[in-house]
Image (cartoon, rainbow, N blue to C red; front, side, top):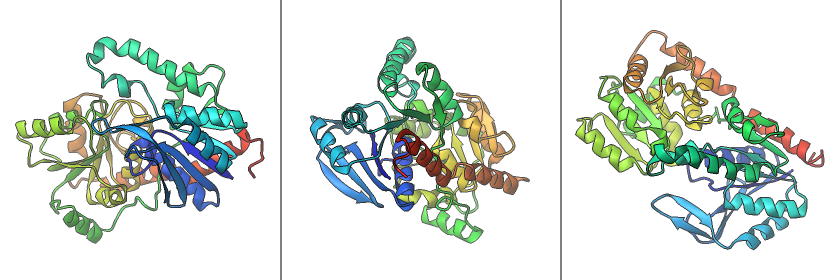
Length: 389
């Protein structure tokens, strides 16, 4: 089978759609399929690269360094040429942005079936806008309209969780939205023995005997990482919180942590390369996800596969992964005291830690990337009328 992916981002970007696309693409390659991807160039300049068997075509783009966004620039013909040359059996788009729209139009002209996965929820953008509370409702209506304009033209639509599918379904009447997990590589993200755990602590310059919590993800307003600063001021445990990621709120959070007297207890690592993430998870004791708008959370899955109990907001799709007292602890969104209590309950040595860690690992295994790959193979074959076998 020949599968062409298209979307706004791909590795080394570490947002959810980029990680999902790369993981699925590489799993398909490992299973004998031919896979390519078309994305806007992060540098702005046209280039190609081979990444773990996937041919990635980066198209000319206008780049905003501050926002970390690249938008295709006058590259419709190039995208159409690449698609025709590759000759995919199926195209799989990841969003409703210009690259996906361009590739969708080219695929339609060639009669190639198109599958789309939606990773977008309007709150992700609406919460970043000035005067967010005043403009949120009309902004969300417009944003949903832009999603519908693309996804109603597809042969099949998926979302990464039951929650995400339920959110999207009312906006696509007559189209069945399928819930298919983003998946996680449970061989790559795994628990480590005590000796290796200590060695990883030293590699990341983390205190060996202390309790260490971890957040991995964008540091933007919709992720509500500022909640963790407020929560850490209310609890002595964990002794250290590591924040791995970049975003528009990073510098403000650093200043806020210093003002709160937490300069020694919250460590901001900034961007962490994807290849380094398994070791970082394995060096920590627990994971926290404060965002109230997660459609799945690959980072939470990676943490659970690594055997970490998770403190998470009781919102979005996170309760599909985190079950109170079974795989971690839940707290009300934007509730600093509740987040502090959840963190405290999972930090340090406590009875049942091994049981919760194994339950977290088991929950992650239900989302293993092999199962995701199999489900998409079946879907691709369905939309292509069985011609891909």
